[in-house]
Every structure is written in structure tokens, then in C-alpha cells.
Image (cartoon, rainbow, N blue to C red; front, side):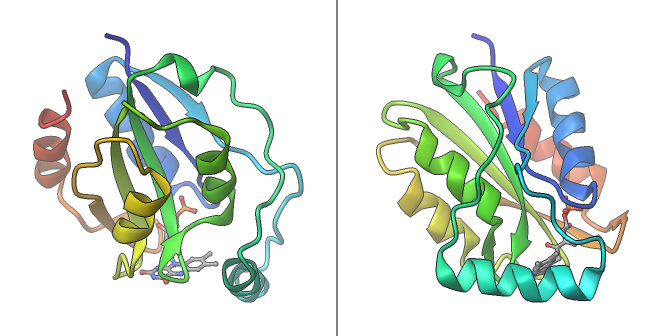
Length: 157
Ligand SMILES: Cc1cc2nc3c(=O)[nH]c(=O)nc-3n(C[C@H](O)[C@H](O)[C@H](O)COP(=O)(O)O)c2cc1C
């Protein structure tokens, strides 16, 4: 059964993890991209991100290169933004019917997943959702070991 890795990434950390997972699984891969681009200035981005998360913003995203509905097993990756998944991922979560799918979630972060795992479980109601993997970064440097990442990948069925 063909698997799909879907991710959103602003600065590349989540993209690098998503690519490793897709390569290991020989899975298809698709990036979630927002129609409106975010500011390059990190401080401006962080405060805009806060406003978006707090207001429950659902930014417009481009259609994926593939139809996520066609896959029974999906790996979904996000950066943690203000203790939850990024707004672009929120939009994607609303666009797919999740019932009956198995969804493996991972979240890159600078130290804490916050309530990302429970938010994922709520948004993915009807799907089987194993525990969210935390992949910690110090800016662009991955702190979580390759071994830990590979062990998690080996659990994907
Ligand atoms: C708007 C914004 C909010 C963030 N909030 C958190 C947070 O609440 N907890 C955390 O550990 N890291 C937080 N971070 C750090 C990112 O989760 C981390 O750098 C992530 O790996 C970035 O992924 P990316 O390079 O794929 O965009 C935040 C970053 C941004 C831009």
C-alpha cells in the first residue's frame, strides 16, 4: 500500500525530516504551501503566527500535488507554532475526510510539543492516530537523534 508524507515547513526543518521519512518508506511526498507568504523577519513571523493561532486562522493553501484522500496511511508533519500545529496544517486537516485512515504525526519544535498531540487527535477524529513524534531542533540543527527518528519510522505500517 502506497504511503503519503505530507508536511508544512516555513524554514526547512520539517521539510528535511519529511524527506528522510519519505525516502525510508519509499512513500510519496507533498508539501502544504500557503497562498499568502509569511514575512521573512523571524520576530514579525513569530508574532503574526501568535495572532493566527489565537484567532483560529485558516489560511488559504494551494491544492496538494496529490490527492490525500487516495491514501490509507499518511504521515503528517508540522512545525510547532505557539504550542500547536501550524495554521496551514489546520487548513489541510479540514480539507480531508480522515475516517478509517492511519495518520502518523510528527512535529518539529524548539523544545516543546505543547498541546500539538491532543490537537492532532481531535482534528483527526475517526482516524487511528499513534503518538506524535517530537523532533527537536536548535534553529536549523536537529537535536533528536537519527536513531530515535529511525525507530519511529520502523513502527509505520
Ligand atoms: C510562529 C512560530 C511559533 C513557534 N512556537 C513554538 C512553540 O510554541 N514551541 C516550540 O518548541 N517551538 C516553537 N517554534 C519553533 C519551531 O517549531 C521550530 O523552529 C521548527 O522546527 C520550525 O520548523 P520549520 O523549519 O519546518 O518551519 C515556533 C516557530 C515559529 C515560527
